[in-house]
Structure formats: structure tokens, C-alpha cells
Image 1: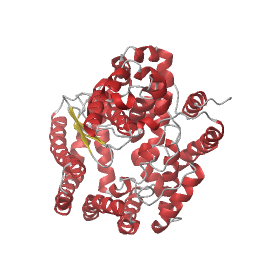
Image 2: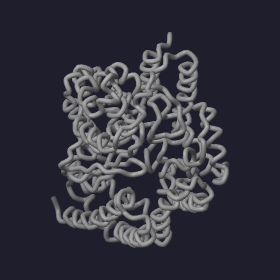
Image 3: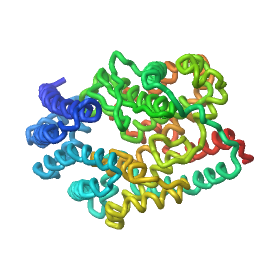
Image 4: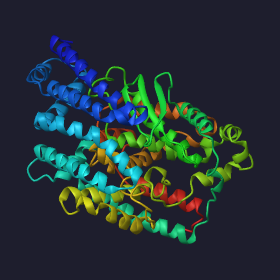
Amino acid sequence: MGKNWDGLKTRLEEIRAVEEALILFEWDNETLAPAGAMGLTAETVEKLSGIYFRMMTDPRLDECLKACRQETLSVEQQAVVRETEKKREDLVKIPREEYEAYSGLTARAASVWSKAREERNFDLFAPVLQEILQYRKRFASYKAKEGQALYDVMLDEFEEGFSMEKLDRFFGLLKGEIVPLLRQIEEEGTPCPADFLKGDYPEEKQEELGRFLAEYVGFDFRRGVMAVSAHPFTTALHNHDVRFTTHYDSFLDHSAFSVIHESGHGIYEQGIGDSITRTPAGEGASMGMHESQSRFFENMIGRSLAFWEPIYPKVQSLFPEQLGNVGLEEFYRAVNRVEPGPIRIDADELTYSLHIMVRYELEKGLVAGEIRVEDLPGLWEEKYEEYLGVRPENVSQGVLQDIHWSQGSIGYFPSYALGSAFAAQIFARMEEEMDVEGLLKNGRLDVIREYLREHIHRFGKMKTSRELLKETTGKEFDPSFYVNYLKRKFSRLCGLNR
């Protein structure tokens, strides 16, 4: 290990300290910060973002990286250098004053979005979204290669290598296979009654269930925290400080599966290797791979009958009045009900990716200039009716339901659907290698979790999502695993003759 690596390590530790401060501000804003704090906090975020930008674009960092290239580095160190170079190359193309202004804008935008959502008034948020969109397009233009579409640049930030061309084929497959399956289930399928999941479920008991489920699937509360926010999310300072939130309403399964989902993200972060945590290589391989882990735990594991078999008596003991007379099979069918609705985070497993398809098509049109911001509410409603057969009652159930655009995360949404598809492919391979159902019936989630840690989590960004998928499953990305999984599961659950 040479002096150049030591110098780089020192610089990255200083940069990471600023990043962690920004992460803490984001966490605080979404959980405990008073609403009136947002304006002044945004100024602090803007200043810290400027400091981060200057540190990352400092020519001395570039010199240090080049010098490290001349040293003999470990695989982990090579990954740190590579990922630092990627981040730096993206930033040096953006004028500092624009980056700082954009950081302040997105810090303030969340409160504008929240107010617009609360008041069901898209007009409040539309000008802010328009400004964010212009910044994102401008930043993408700085980074675009010759002939590269701006939306492809944005998509690459979240899932490298998955362009509109690939996503069009992916979503085209879902549109051709899942939309007709949904129609058939609605017309011919056997209902899965779930009335008992809605009612008086005290929040303190939901919280107790949530902590139990998070620990059961493997989230380590010695290195993590669970809180409440309007929009569930997971964030991490490092692998010894991972935080997630959930939300509570009158549906028991909404919170329960939100916790399992976010725990999947958290387990990924806690499983990243100690040698790379707090470095640019110490993050999830991609947004899609990160989402694959949360969807894997939520759906492939959490919505299986075998998962609930050893723990359902515990759930009944927490809610004896509501679930005391509800059998395990009935509960299992209820939490797997197909019930198209307007809200993405409450969507059933079958229709979830159709929610993402709506957002993908709208984002693509927005960035291309084919859709105006002011037209979003109406187009949103039309696409929901076309794909899911429902119309939002208001903009808060529609275009204002997600926080992502206020954060500038245009291009993020397709990662959710890709994550579900990655998860199905990983699950298929896992079933070939071990008795997953038997492990779940015996509460041995540690075996499943260790498999994921060994094949995916510990590597962080040392490998791309495509490399991890190929090495874990032996195959390149193949969305047919996802489609076949959904068709097989829901045809059986809903009693279809296929």
C-alpha cells in the first residue's frame, strides 16, 4: 500500500464526512425536523453541497487518483479509485454555481411537494418541477456522448447500461403479458377476501410487528434504526448505521410489507464489506440491484405461505380481535390479493410494475419535450385507466404521490421494475441450489440472507448489477423469469385455467 493511496484515502474520508452530514439532514427533514426549518436548512444543504462539489472537483484529487493508478492496488482499492473517478468525471462537467443552486432547489422542493400533496394542488408544485426538469436536462447535456438521448443519460445514473431501447422492450413485454393477465384475473379469477386487513390496527402494535418482522428477516438493530415518514425510504451513513422508515394506516399489510421491503434495502447496506464501506465503492451496485433485494424480501420471501407458517401465531397474538379467527391460508391469500389501485407503494405484487410503466412513459415524454409539466395530471389519469383500470380521485393519489421528482430523481423509477425482474431471476437460481420453502418453514432466513450476502451484498459497487446477476444466476438479464414467476404464482392463486 503506497503513499498515494494513503493520500487518496485521507481525501475521501474528508469528502465522506460532508456526504454523511448531507445524509443526516435528509433523514432529519423526512422524519423529525419541524416544517418551519426547511428554508434555513436548505441554505445549509446548499453550502455543504458546494463544499462537496469543490472537494470532488479539486484538481489535486485528480492528481491523486492518477498517481494511485501507478501503484499496485487491491481489488477493493481499484474499485474505490474507479468509482471515485466516475463521480468526479460527472461533476467536473457541471458549473459549480449551477450545482449549488440545484442542490438548494431540491432541498426546498420536498416541502413544496409536501404542501402541494396535502392541499391536492399540482399547480403549487408544477413550477418547481419545471425548474428541476430544466436543471436535470442541462446536466444531462453536459455529460451526454455524441448522439446520446438526454433521458438515456439520466437512466444510466441509476442503472448503467439500461437505455430506453432496452427498457422499451422490457416494458413492452410487461404490457403484452401482465396487462392481459390482470384483465383475465378481474374477469375470471377467484377473489381473495381481505376485509379483515383493514380496520382498527393500533399504531403501537403495528410498530411492534414491524420491529419483529425486520429482525426476523435479518435487519440488525444494533446497526440500524426504524422511524416513520410520509414516504418510506432507506438511507445509510455506512454499514454500521443504516436507517429506514415506514408509515402506518388502517391496512395492516401496508406497514408490514413496507417494513419487510425497507429491511431488504437495509440488509443489503449492512452486508456491504467493511473494507469498502464509507467509500464510493461501498454502496449498492445500482438502484435496480438495491431494489431487487427489497422486492426479494418483500415478495418472493415475505408473500410466501412458508414465510408466515412459523410466525403467524405471533401476528395473531398481537392482533387477537382482528386476526384470531383468521386462518393462515386465508391470511396468505389476502396479502397476495390482486387489487389494482392508484397508489404505487400500496400496490399488489402483480400490478406493481405497471405503476412504474406509467412513470417511465411520462418521464420519457417529459425529457424529450413531448409532454408539458402542466399536462402530467391528466396524462397520469389516462395511463392509469389504460393499464390498471383505475383513476386517481385527486392529484395527491395521482401525480403527486411520489417524492422522487422533487428530489431530482428523474430516471430512477425504472429501477423499481428492473429490481423486481432481477429478484425473480435470483430467486429462480436460489430455488435450484437450496430448499427455499423448507428453510422458510423452519425459520432459517439466515441461510437465505447469507447466500445473498456472499453473492451480492458484500461487493457493494465492486461489480456492476449485470456482473452480479450473471455470476449469481449463470445468465444475463432475462425478464422472462419475472413474467413467468408472476403468471405462475397468480394463475394458481386466482384459480385460472392456463
